[in-house]
Length: 390
Image (tube, rainbow, N blue to C red; front, side, top):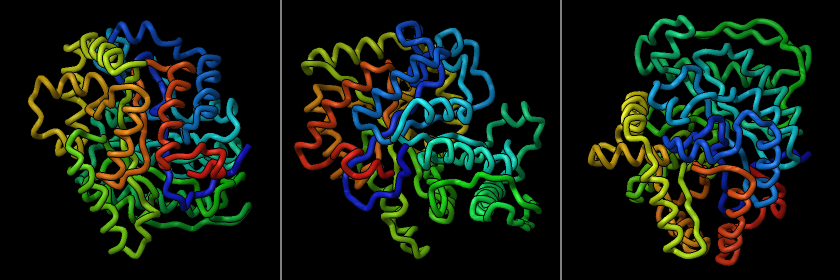
């Protein structure tokens, strides 16, 4: 196993929004039935090893606690849903070098629980784990946990920043070393049992969203923010600039905080074949399920409300139904590689988080042809050639 460090090079990085349900990124019964059994750990093991060999940098485990609406469940979207920290352990055990990112909600899990889970996962993986630090603000999840509604938006982000600081204090403390923490939202006194994270000073921290409050949180306590790559690259570039400018204002190196952009890819041996493949995906979307998910999706994210405010409703439903609103690159491996290079030049984003429709070893291996084309343009090298750095 390899302990990963933060890379100082300028090469592109690629993660996978790892499948945690039958059809995670498209509301389509046809795709759900064509995908591997999401509860078969052997399928995940083979797929994760293929992703590692192809040159992906990390596997990203999104998560939520409540079941989706009946129309979504009927379309194969959202049920069953694997639990991020448990599945992270399985993926770390199945691989040797690739990073694994777990979503852990600060509003639902005490910081000491997060610190303990994260330290164990990083130790299990030999220093390959990262945390997607989600505030946890969905009404249905609050009801599930029996929690009161947050007093206000600002309070939620103050709570999140304080939770991350407390997690870091426990990670930084030596074995047997006491932590005494008294904050606005959390109190912790005592020495947390080991192990401690392998990565120093801390495992990388992601935070979803790029609202002004989210950007302040990322700059203060995290390393990555993520949002959708949308067709309006000027909007994506403006987001990346806002994060970099805010980092400079806060006294951080802007290269130490980055945007990871979610994006879809549909490949074909010819452009015509790729377009046919994509049209099959879009035509298979269950519009009733997509309509409900679009409403939920936008209500739970001010960032996405802003990104898609000018998109016509019918188009928005199909976009969210196939790719959760992210741009989908369609073409041959060479054409898709050229688009990645173009997006990078236009936006300064070098971290891409793939949202696959179909998943499995063959799907992830096929992306290797895109990566090799990017190698030819000087935009990518295999992670093994740069020490499997984040």
